Picture 1 (cartoon, one colour):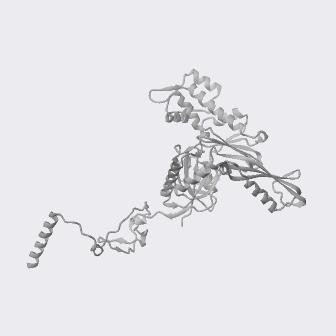
Picture 2 (picture 1 turned 135 degrees about the vertical axis):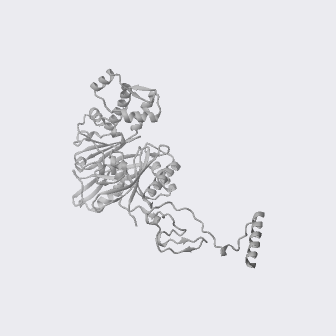
Picture 3 (picture 1 turned 180 degrees about the horizontal axis):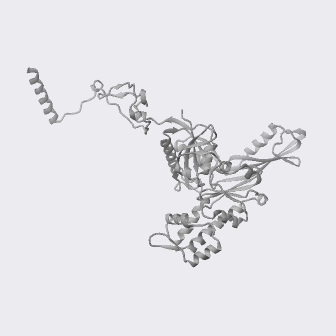
Length: 470
């Protein structure tokens, strides 16, 4: 039986599906990668149309199955978007005197945190920060004597409405979920180094509709927030120059810069540089610069505002950028100018050994980091039944076991494969109807014969009699 892992990423405006396998040497082979426009069913990473979402999900799985020539039994799902956030929580237990903390006490503390009831939120994941016993902060309190134990937790939660809508969409699509992962946590595990997490850093995922901010210090996630601003906001600003969204997006990708030095700007103004919109229209470079830089500055300021004050001076590894928006020209320079953080790094690809013949994977341009991370996180086989080969009969038999049809409709057992089956070509099985045998068709009402068929039959009988007499 084939084995592979399949995952679906619900981005802020697009769904991506991936399938591949983990090799014995620790590398990952990506066998299939597909995408589906989800702008009509998802907004800022939140499902707002269940039926259209179900159609998109079904399309993703169908495309993956065709590429793999194998059905899919279940998928891993990565969620993010505006409905995901982090909530700090503290659970305290008073202990009898001379009590030594054991595993049961710690588990009870964690269960109490898991049982927290947030009115509109569903807990997806919990990151244990540290424990405080007496005046001492420790990572593992087991074996320490004390009278008061305090557990500090960071709960990763999601809006219950989105959670229920997501599950309903998968049910309508007929797709089983292996497990749901918070996409920002999975992404961080594959693009950040252990040193960056330990010394302190901020991971900024610049998406189309949202920007996700993850703060790490001492190897733990300390804060997670999602800003409802992304690359599409820049595109919409450019449309104010009287152009369509498609034209604005192309203009942004080709000419936009997140930051322009003063000397460079002066040179462009002196040269009166313009950028073409189409064959007849163009805009001045200063207009584009003003629009793009204003929105980029707003996004960066919101990112910096999300970092808790106690960590702003503890980010020794600086800021790590990823996501499609991080491909904009001079984006690192813009973050350096607006945050005064000197250490800026762009994570172009995951810290994994990836093998693939797919061109989009070979680009390594930050856009696939999340979906690849989701597949790497999975550990269960997602393969279902193989798609039937061409020439399969009603009973799904192929190759040596597939009976071949004779002209009269009877089936005979074949002892050899045809050249087409040997080539391994596959296709979706068509609905077939076996031809009835002549003997089996005696009870059915014969079709009414036309006058021409009657004349032809008489001529045939007359000719037969003449041949018998001769």
